[in-house]
Length: 151
Image 1 (cartoon, one colour):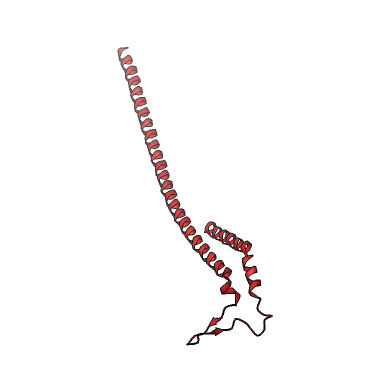
Image 2: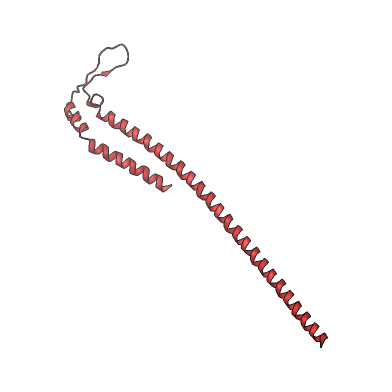
């Protein structure tokens, strides 16, 4: 009976040892899988952050360049509008200087006055273009915005 009791106790002890070892192995496997999963997630998060930072830098550079381009285009448009508003440049009333020694210029008057509007008409037309100037500025702004968003 003592022998059977020893065998039964040995079997119980062996089963407990095997069960304990199996539990430890399962715990190790789950822990290992968890650490691999966590490392994978952390790597994906790191890559996503790097990608987001790169995209942000590119977008900031693109935005800065778009602002510079718009400012330059707006300056060019303002300069062109200012030249259009300059009555002396547009009216045809002043003489045209000739090259050489001549101190007099070409006459501002033409033989056929029906083809050239009088200076007062041109001046009034140019001064009434504020609406058109604002429309051109709005169009420029929209064009630049479309170009910015399109790229």
